[in-house]
Amino acid sequence: MRDFPSCFSENGVQVADSSSSFASSSTVTKTAQNLVTCLYQCRIRGRSCLITVSWTKTLMGLGLALGIDDSSHHCLCKVEIKPWLFSKKNGSRSLEAYSCKIDVYWDLSSAKFGSGSPEPQQGFYVAAVVDKQMILLLGDMTKEAFKKTNASAILPLTSSAVFVAKREHLSGKKVFSTKAQFCDNGQVHDLVLECDTIGVSDPCLMVRVDRKTVLQVKRLKWKFRGNHTILVDGFAVEVLWDVHNWLFGGGSSVGNAVFMFRTCLEKLWGGGSQQQHDDDMSLLTWSSFSQRFVDCKSHQNPDFKLVLYAWKSE
Image 1 (spheres, rainbow, N blue to C red):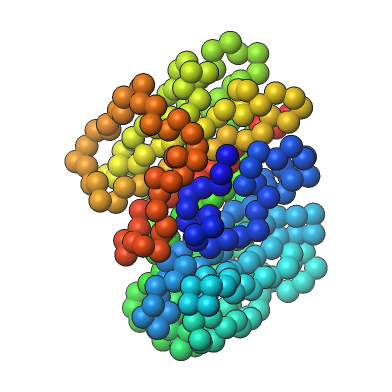
Image 2: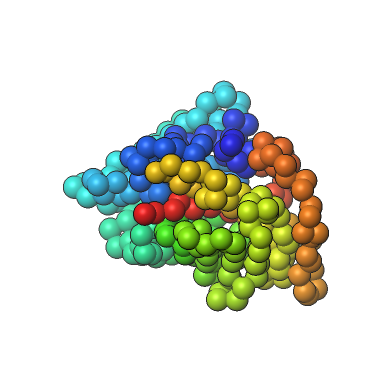
């Protein structure tokens, strides 16, 4: 199976990630389960660019990496903040990209995290500044960020960056839960994937958003790959799944299933959800599936993609 979507593949920003395939090593699995990667579309001196922010969790603590895809020089400019268990949780670094200096600032000293996730939920900021212009601002400490960076403060205090994709790893026995947005600046929802494959002759896949079941796939052994469209926040969200390794992986390593939630921003619906035909087998291979999504950089208003790797734990 190829890694996907193309926003995270060879045509987009790359982040070192050992989860590109179904890894059999328990060490690799544990590493993959502690990585969250977010992709933002920003503008530097009028030029569109992609910035990748990766949050990691290791035995040494939590880590942060920010990468900028400098397409003009075909390189990835990266700032890495090593695990901060024994180091300062705030500071700044600079890097060169697009023929200019980019200053990166962060303050995670008061950061609060969700259950098991390396990505902070509140009490922090991460900022990138070019020519005193805030090109990327993450977190809820916006006033502190503008004060620290001396960036031009234009109300409302924010940046023009657009959140276009997220990749996250989840682990569990049969229930996998996370907090999820389905579009830039969208509402944060409780997202739950549930599937019991141990000792069950006819497994069923359930997807819930805010405790409401939005997708139920029966006869999963016949429909281990597929797609379905749901409605969230007034937007059509296409759900695609591949649980082949859960059902047929075999051996001591079950591997991971892969889910994508793709928000079709151009398809604003008035209500109801649209059931795609149950026997739609257009996704015969995951390779052909990943090719359906073009490089994010080719869109001025890219659709949002949430990619989840769900690892079965013993």
